[in-house]
Amino acid sequence: QVQLVESGGGLVQAGGSLRLSCVASGRTFNNFAMVGWFRQAPGKEREFVAAISWSGRIITYVDSVKGRFTISRDNDKNTMSLQMNSLKPEDTAVYSCAAQYYLRTSYRRWEDYDAWGRGAQVTVSS
Image (cartoon, rainbow, N blue to C red; front, side, top):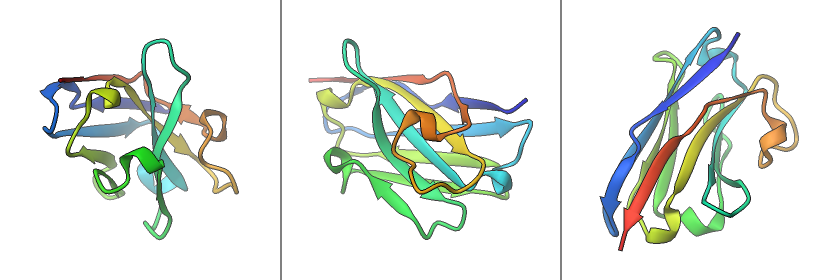
């Protein structure tokens, strides 16, 4: 049973930074072809944020976070992170990590993944 657990969420003022981390148990990050982050704001649909392949050769972001967020993974340490800079109130959401066991052609949808974390709250005040 794979479990993904996020940490690092919290409350920050606009313009500030936060770093989210995701740790896996039951399966190592070396077994995840793709890992990603999603977010869901109150009253809104879940949104893809970023994804990174096992080797790091594929990295992709939603346009609204490009230049501000950086996704990374450390397969040896069994973790992945999302560095979020220049945060805006519209970044407020529950952020969840997700893991894809086998590389697929699609990785921007929640259902493209095989395991998901419960999420961490990120709140950006204006």
